Length: 226
Image 1: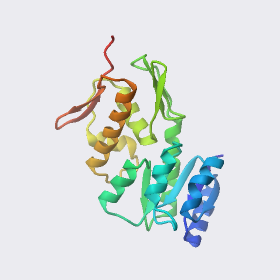
Image 2: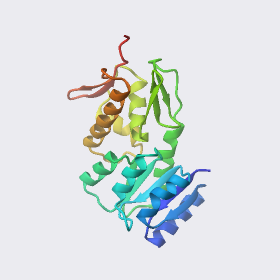
Image 3: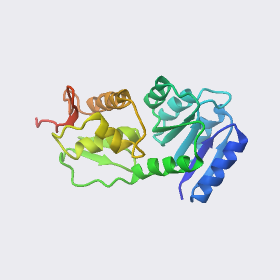
Image 4: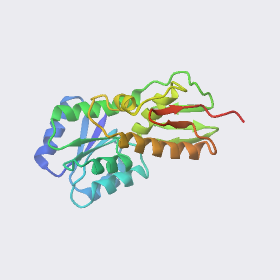
C-alpha cells in the first residue's frame, strides 16, 4: 500500500485529503509545518509527497529543492499561484506535477494515481543495449555509471528512447506525460528536456543523444560506437 505524505497547514483541507486518499486505498501521514518535511523524509519512507507551496515556516520551492538533493520521491505541488512562471519554476525545482487551488479532491486522487503509475512503466528490450533504464528508481545506467532522473524526465526520455529517430512534437510529449490533457506551456517541456540533456551529457560525455529539430520537436539518436 503506497504512503502519501501530505504537507498542508489548512487542517480541514488536510483532513479531506486524508479521507479521499485513504478511501482510494492509500496510507497517509500529515505535516503542517515546512521545517518538518525534510527531516521526516530522511527518517521515514513515502511513495509520494503532496506539498503545499505556502506551508508555514519554509517556502515550498525550497523544500522541493532540498528533497531533490537526497530523494527522487514523486512530488505534487499544491499552489494558489497560477502564473506560468511559478508553475515552471516549481517543475524546474524537481516537482513532478502541480495542482492549483481550489481543486477537486477527486482530481487530486487521480493526479496521485497518475504519477504513481509512472513507476510501473515496463522496460522492453532496449534499442540501445549500452543504456539500461530502471523505471522503479527513475535511473539510467551507462558503462557502469548511473544517473537519477525525476519521474517526468524519465517518462520523456523513455518515450524518445523507445523510438529512435522519431521526431516527437512538444504537444505529443505533453500528451504522453500529462494524460489528463491539461494545458501546459511548451516552455515546460523545453525546461525538462534541457535538464534531461544536462544529466545525460554528464553520463555520456561528448555525445548528444537528444536532438532538437527546429520547428518540429525532439528526437533520440543512440550514441555512436567508439
